[in-house]
Length: 476
Image (cartoon, rainbow, N blue to C red):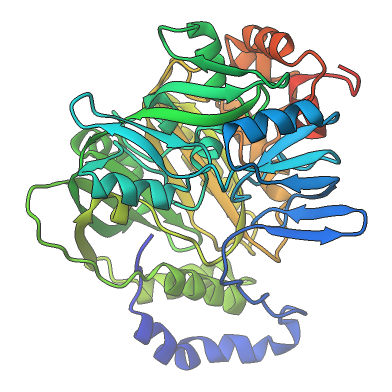
């Protein structure tokens, strides 16, 4: 998602191209101005007389816990879990939009269980403490001459939180992060430490790879790594119908491919990343935030005139413009997002990806207030029981709404489209799937619930959202 218009031309031409329409309809202008975009990333934790108030990054999820604990080692975490009588939920960057964290019991931050434990440059594996943020993880691997095969596009999440929710990047032959995990260490609800891998309690490992924090507290994870590498990124613009036709072939040709559709413009921004053999770097200033402001401004000016909005966008977008960047893989694949948003995302069978994207676009553009780009990615299948990519290669489609604006349509209107195409939800995003839907989408759903009940018979790792997802009563 990079520069998509001649920004200075848009600003200079605004008064000429848009003033007549805007002035003529000044009385019809929106009653409220766009909310100011926050500039910080993170969660809010406030201690009060009755507990700890918490909310996630976007503000879509919040709650008040009895306490917030920050154990400094595994033994302290074991003691904490044993001594705590009620619910225990882990909290990291708060970058999940679904209410996975809120509890009236104990919140556990793993921020003090952070950093590289060990690495093996011969076996290409590395073990990290669970609370390590992805940005730190990438830098520490790079210092050791290593890197992850793939990364998501945001780098603030904790490692445990990212793998537990099936966080992913893009690449037709690259899986989500949890699929590269080779071993896990957990503190169970009874306080014991359990270690699992594909050869050591393999069923439990397949359940724990993506567990939503419902089996215990992950303390360490060992993951596959590779020699550190550089990437070359190319960003270009195409009419969206053309890019939709080309997308499957582009995904086959490039290590990473994705695109962002720019609502009410008819254009999409294609993005590829491929291995770059050289050591030279080229890192132009990011134009992501400029682009969002331009799309929002165009919406604010012409939201009531979608045809004119599209016409103006066509006049201002330069389809010949491209951007190229070269740098370390982690510097290009992952960033922070200053502009806050709410998000829904689903993963559909790859053969249905293009058709689903077309219908999502049609559905989005029934709402004139939409301006945030739609994201489309490719992910390879894996074998984790609750992975949205369980034994099927998939296409991921994500739809966003800026914080401060209505976002209920993300579930009410987009979720039915995802269900039509047999989509599986991203566990950390807003979604409309219920306990009735999920057993038919996840072949090992029942097996996972059995493992969960065995490890946590009292439901100490569950909050109301997870009870609903798993179809459990408040007492289960």
